[in-house]
Amino acid sequence: MLIVFARQSVEDVRPIIEQEAITAGIEQAAAQVELRSSFVRQVGQGLVATAINTFVLIMLALGIRLMGVDLLSVLSQIGSA
Image (cartoon, rainbow, N blue to C red; front, side):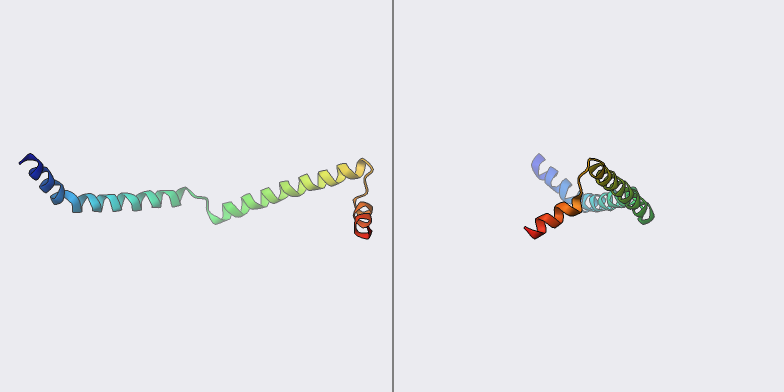
């Protein structure tokens, strides 16, 4: 008798539970979208990352050149071999 009552109670409330679950899912997705960066901010972050990467590569090239290694001659020797 108690099991039948519990099943009936759950079946009666099932549409409400489903509606609340859907609503909660949509609200959670909307909150995640709001937390993401805007397009302008992402472009700015990309530019900063590119600038840092370029700076590191320039420093690496200068360091290799100051050590006396000529990369162009090394590459031409590899190409002619």
